[in-house]
Length: 83
Image 1 (tube, helix red, strand yellow):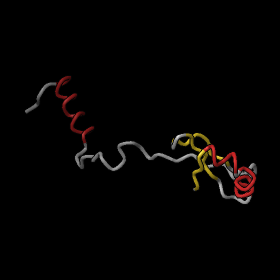
Image 2 (cartoon, rainbow, N blue to C red):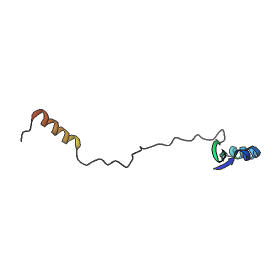
Image 3 (cartoon, one colour):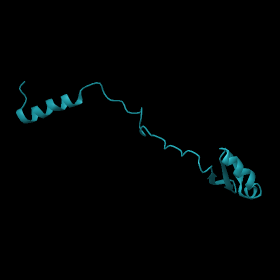
Image 4 (cartoon, rainbow, N blue to C red):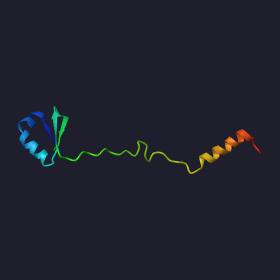
């Protein structure tokens, strides 16, 4: 995507608008900092990026059945240790 300084955009506005209308968006920058993006009116809207999760792939689920172990501990608390 082309980035154009605001001064150059003023002098080349007609050419840049024609490019945007043909489907070639551009960015207008001020002092090198991007300020606005110019796109055609009928350009399709950008779809939001779907995030799987910020910890995706970083958490490992243990193979043991944690809940079953907790059930046994709870039973021992209420009914005592039969051993």
